Image (cartoon, rainbow, N blue to C red; front, side):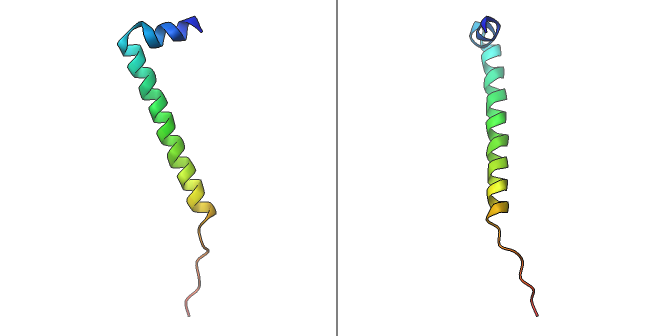
Length: 49
């Protein structure tokens, strides 16, 4: 735990890299949740005659 605290708050480069990693994970998670939501609430296609 001390390693991660030193990495995040020891210098600005470590802090910014951790913020980029966390932001990327949150963005990918949001897209994944949105995709699953759209798939679950999609209406089946209707056949046109």
